[in-house]
Image (tube, rainbow, N blue to C red):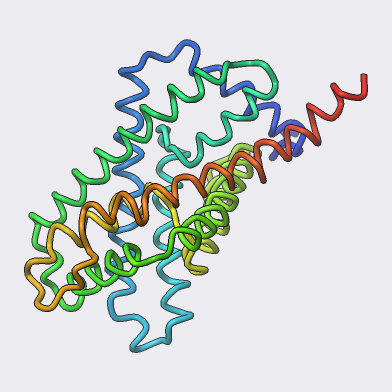
Length: 270
């Protein structure tokens, strides 16, 4: 009978081996795949915005968060199953560096290109949603602006720590999806951790590349907008600390931890 899943040791081995793709994959291919990931995460983010726009008033804030996280998880499902390059998940490339499969330079090259691709994809998607004028339906537009404003008002250390917690879960989702050998298993692996981080209120850099620009692009339609909702605050007050936190969460608590337990620790004992 075919094995339905990989053990943790086999999973980190597969992740390390998969990291070697950056040695052969062209920059053009990487860029296109990163654009796709920006689109895919944005699909989940815009759906979460729609679903949570009035859910709290009818079901309570906790259930609204649960619903928002549930639908947001479609983004990582698309990334994992359809294939694309997502910056937060690519924190796991650190395990390939630690194992000597790729260089630090190759990892940083990938991260830089993927961040740019994810950002451009998410902003383009936000522009399409703004131009579609679907945000005019009900409370969706006001909710989108409120989400963006709240994210631009987070203190640096708060945004950083929420970023750490977020990508800890995102990389665990990728870890479990790698372990799963069939589509239903990969879907479930993506769903539970992603639902958890969204419902908890953690911060995901690529999701925020959609959430905040979407609010910025439509804010003029709403009176008395908080002046803190600016492109500068998007970058300085949110994207930078959240990205740094995402790196720490993914690299330290998943890539390094599992590499040490299943690969590095064994090498050090020889």
